[in-house]
Length: 95
Image 1 (cartoon, rainbow, N blue to C red):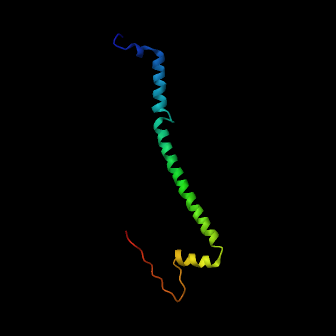
Image 2 (image 1 turned 60 degrees about the horizontal axis):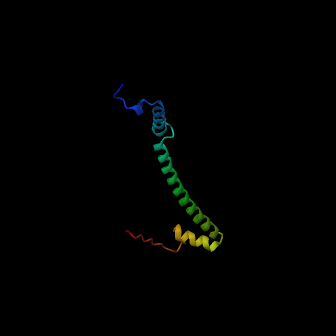
Image 3 (image 1 turned 90 degrees about the vertical axis):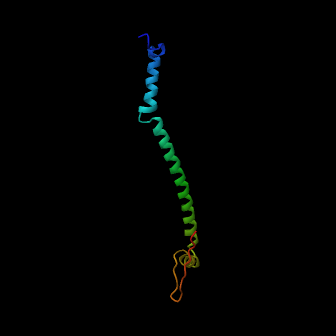
């Protein structure tokens, strides 16, 4: 018993250290789980911002498509629709 340091014999320090070990490493909401969940939250937040930007762009396009000339322009530019007497050539640049 003389080889054991006095601070390890103290029951309060032993109890506090056991509680700290349990809460930091063994609990369901330990430190590693908190960091992992925080990282997931950051990814979801950035995905939410990107989706909100896409939604605004789609709403803007939808508002513009109330005009018939805009519908034709959108169909010809984005969906490559053509009239019967036309040919369409699409050029893609490789980078």
